[in-house]
Image (cartoon, rainbow, N blue to C red; front, side):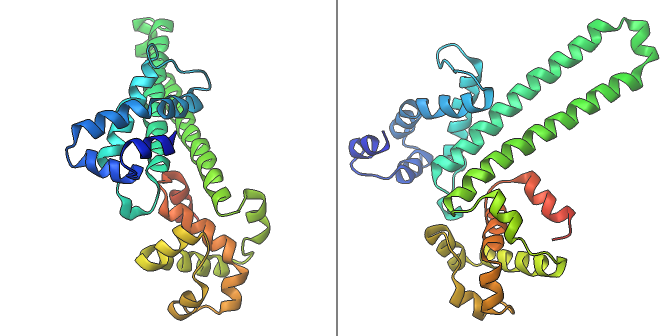
Length: 246
């Protein structure tokens, strides 16, 4: 499908089409919103765990608006492909919508189950129920992020099982590896190199960081894994890094 779209647009890449849409080309924008409806429906269905009918399901409308938002906010400088970025935006907006609807339903159910006197007598129970719901929402987001992260790891020929085996055992070694990952992320050339080659620029890194080439090679996979977290929009995984002091 993508090849066909590129041919129809004079061999313009998808990213170039997105830039045209951002700059105000309404025709290109409308074409993108129309041609990528199957992509949007598939992304939404992965969240809803069911078939999404573009003509009937409200979730598709949310996904379509999210795709439009992704077009307006996408930046090629971040290194991710537009479709990877758009998929994340569509999924998160869909989750927001579902959770908003479910939270309203939960509140309505609580209101129905308690009369006015009971509600005034048990505000702590109502608050506790809503707090539990918020915790479930956070856990949902984390699961989605982990799924997305797992897919990103595959593009670097990495996996969770592999990371458990190669992660540095000592805290100082992990901290050192995270610092290297941050150095890569903050350096434009190194960042572009890793995104394009899916590997570390070992020779250049050896000159930039106070870590031996042997250590860099030993922790290569762990460094790449941390780099992916830093580069992608993984809110909860980034929070985890901060929480453990890395």
